[in-house]
Length: 241
Length: 241
DNA sequence: CTTGGCCGTAGACGATTGTATACCTCTTCC
DNA sequence: GGAAGAGGTATACAATCGTCTACGGCCAAG
View 1 (cartoon, rainbow over the protein chains, first blue to last red):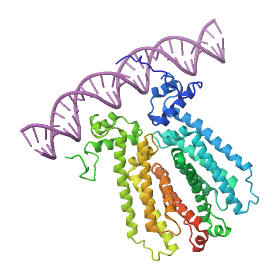
View 2: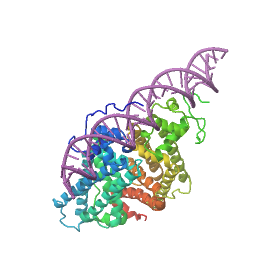
View 3: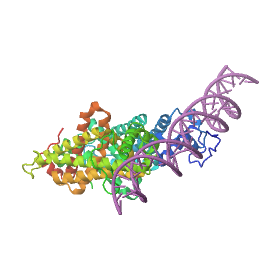
View 4: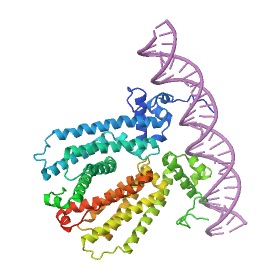
């Protein structure tokens, strides 16, 4: 009814002013989604305003918000998986070699160290990429089937990475690939809860970290004990904590 | 027909077709949120339209969408907890009595039955209240801190119920209250994933149900094995599956 | 030099939104 | 029987929305 000449003001810009177009829009969307609402509920103009761009610029890069979401997921999940893989490679080369790979006590001790390191790794990552992580979890249960599926896939991929890692590095006795794969998925999913707790309750971080470690170890311990309780008892292993 | 302060509903049953105002708005919001978007992103007019009411009627009952969300949560979480409690009371009175409560084999067999029944119970509930459940999970990770907190509390309450139930009915050897409480929270949270899988993949329901049962048993088994591997081995118990 | 993609801007449109004000119809209570 | 108030409706308005069309720089290929 009235002229639209109202100021689409060059608002205070949170995203990097240097990055161009596409990237600025993605960062702006993430920023808004983290503080305001879900990705799908964002307004085209809202995002453009936050990015300091003209509303129509959105059309140059994305057809809709699902497309933007997928681009963000692609970019960040790549960073995440690579980061996980890289940091996971480190302890394997460090002083964690087993003196006697057949010694179950040694193997279990190493497993504890690896679990501790891996949990710390995940919690560090989510702390560093807080907004992206929170939005990711949100959209994993969100209203867009496309984003839901993509994010589930990310989780499953990470679970598969973890499976390969455990199989290759730990060689826990008696556990088959399928056992490890199942446990990995359970762990990855549960970690989403631990991670959110971790972010939201900074004063309880040490406790949450220990709970997470304990959960992982408990699952492995239970799986081993389920397969061979006698051998486990005879090995003299003790559950930590 | 209705007065103000104090009591609300003359009937526990609230049929969809012709319920009064408030209820129609809540149901309309649920319906829209399940198919369209997140609760917080719904429009006031949108909901009123779906409910077949004038937009301004919304104001008569709710100040904002958080308030509507809380009302929905209140109503449905009450149904859920009561339903869980009631159906959980059943097997306790049925033929599941222990011949010898001190017999670990008997106790473990009963534990398996209770776990099976409880998992079935949860999966049945989410199937029956699909839309409400999906929206609930969505808002648990959603953008409104108020609804997030309320839904976390619901989960924790259910976990507490489960703790009391396990302590009272099962009396698994060697597990302290805190152990059971921790396991309960882990189980309840993991069940959110199992439940969503269950809803989204009807063709794999039996498999998902078994996975869920196995997860619960694995946690208890692991916890017992962590406390006393020797006793567990000596008892002659076998892990099912 | 010209052509054609990109990338970004400008202005305008119709639709929809949240909300404010006012009016109407029932109960319920004194 | 009159007051109070809750539930529901009608109308109106400014703001914001998504989208359309048109315009202008930039850079590489012809």
